[in-house]
Amino acid sequence: MRAMVLERQPGKLRQLEVPIPEPGPGQVLIRISTCGVCRTDLHIVDADLTEPKLPLVPGHQIVGTVESAGPGASRFRSGEPVGVPWLGWTDGDCRFCGEGRENLCENARFTGYDIDGGYAEFAVADQRFCFPLPETIDDTHVAPLLCAGMIGYRAMAIAGDGERLGLYGFGSSAHILCQIAAAEGRRVFAFTKPGDAKGQEFARSLGAEWAGGSDEKPPESLDAAIVFAPVGRLMIDALKASDRGGRIVSAGIHMSDIPSFPYELLWEERSLHSVANLTRDDGTALLELAARHGVEPLVEVLPLEEANEALDAIRSGTSEGSTVLRI
Image (cartoon, rainbow, N blue to C red; front, side):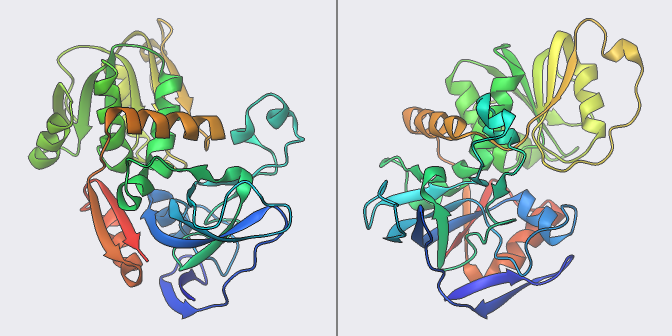
């Protein structure tokens, strides 16, 4: 099968012919139709996240159909559409799994990092960590929901129910979450790169009440903010823009250092949080919300062999919305 493979860090992906994997016990073999391209993939390629499986097939927003099943795998029938997210396996035995916090599993394995992912024609996945997909969302537009959407959903849940929600960095996750938040009655304030008039208009078109540069203050104080851009300074900017009790959530898996700041910014019960991975409950809830509200990610579709170009666009900040590889 064709696959885009990372052989060393940092590096470029190479298109190679590799054997079709065999599903093991409890696994399904998936014929891939699309795979979303995520900033986390870029962090792996650029060695911001170290110690992946090498050689590695990246990609953790996998959409396809079940081709065959390994021993004991009976959850899905042949030909059934499924999605595969970042969280690919947990032990079920550690204290975090026992507390219902499988996203913090001490021995978790991740798709496109510890396990070969979706930049290929086929992939194997643990059937327990595959999602049945909504019939109302096609395979191109559902792919970004499997990470960008799910992580955004978890971040919004941690941010709480505050009405005035700030989104810093208006990329793949934020443009999905903006649609959901607006549909749920939140007032969204979007922060883009300074001077990005096109991006700000895009945010308003998706339901943002206000959009401006990350160097601007919103017209009202925020009840909560989610920082998607991997820029530590934005956590402080969001604190400055928040009201008493404001929650600031970092939704990235990698971020530059957060600068020191005076305690007065944190006082009055403001708080800083991070989001780690996702749970299967998060994924189920996000897919239901997306189907209910008719969420439609803005998608640029590229062929598998242009995976490096897709990553370059994320690296340079020229990518708008979500990028999906069609296999």
